[in-house]
Amino acid sequence: MAIKLVIGDFNKSSWSFRAWLVLAAAGIDVTLEQVLLEQDDTRSNILGWSPSGKLPVLIDGNLVINDSLAIAEYAADLHPDAGLWPEDFDLRALARAASAEMHAGFVNLRTQMSFGLGTGDRCEALWDTTREEIARILQIWTELRARSGHGTYLCGEHFGIVDAMYAPILFRFRRFAVELPAPLQAYADAVFDFGPVRTWLHLAATRP
Image 1: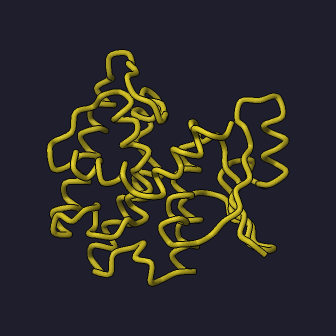
Image 2: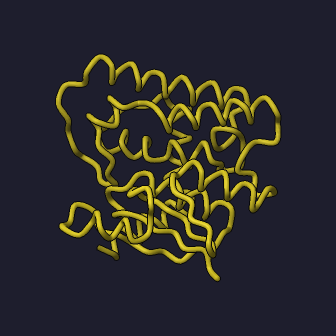
Image 3: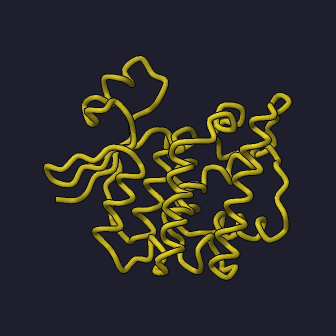
């Protein structure tokens, strides 16, 4: 039985985007099931798939896995040779810490700068806490790239879980014109050009 990934809107569900990117980076074929958000029947439709009432959710036979990070770890276990985590022990620990920090934090940034795939939007004057969170993210990216030798992605030449976790942040920065230092802009451009990212953008343009 094919693995099914139940997602929200392509233009709205950043957590669905993360899970999709990890599975695609691992070469795992999935059947997509979409639940449109902010509809009268959204809650009941999600509960039909996800006991947590949240998306995304991965269904592999009788196994139901909710939460993007848990789905990412499942993909890494299924395909340990896909390079989803760095091989280096210390760098892998730092990538996991950075992924967990994204998973649990940056609430002010996510509140003020909503996820979207477009550009040219404006938000109100940024809170100090939002500016601090932006600075922290840039610090994480800079330190991971330095530790890994300044490869294409955060931890080298493989697009990994940590890149998927932060990809929606790059789209937030692009949407609201947050200027990046040149080395990090090069990283952002590589992510925007990553095949599964372009596929997601195509799906967003051709599906509801």
